[in-house]
Image 1 (cartoon, rainbow, N blue to C red):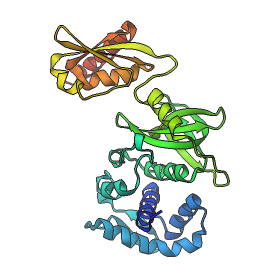
Image 2 (image 1 turned 180 degrees about the horizontal axis):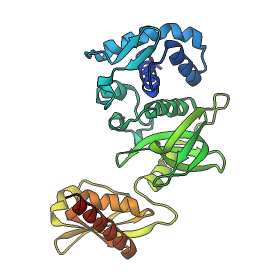
Image 3 (image 1 turned 120 degrees about the vertical axis):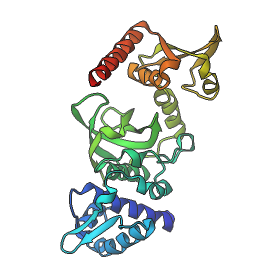
Image 4 (image 1 turned 90 degrees about the vertical axis):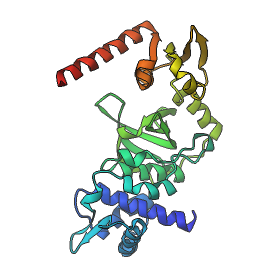
Length: 303
């Protein structure tokens, strides 16, 4: 790793550790957390923390400084900068690209906008595990569910899908490639004494195209969405999925594709609101209508 990138990574990891803390955190505690990531001697690293924090504040050049210190208590992010993390975007986008694979590549621009306490630290851990090919254990809550399950996985890629951060990883238990929502992951632990082999990038690309980029799965169903004439210019540029079929009829435009999750379709149609109509399948159309009606009723109550 280039020295410049190594310094940026170090700053990001220190900021992440401080953000994760509820209160002031000492240089020794920061070093201990850093040691858990990199398996280095914490006492040796603790001597560098103060200088690294000075470098962080110089890098942002903000007033008041991003990280403040208090004698005998340690360091914390100044309250001015804890409401959102837009200030961090220039630094993070220099180092944390979501994936190293060209066919998936996307900079990490949306992530500071949605970061919550601890989640940036989780991203650092996953990114490190991916680079070093170390397995990770974590607790996971599936999308739209509440119950935790515990996983051990090999992380191969992190990428954006419709403004959501996704993790592509192999479940060690059943040896299946899966996708995980980043916001559903917690309690991350890197398995330092194991290393998994590299995976053929063509396999990752195939998995991405057939499972992530938009919705093909074992129970895929034919979906037809009707778009009004005003959508023409957009539809000429947009590709929802490689299996899509777009045609014009009676001045309107129709998109056919195969999808395995109704909620993904609802989200897509809702992006266009009055310019799109879900035609098929009929049961999904009925369910989408019920969702819209519920939303209308909700807004009426708020008036």
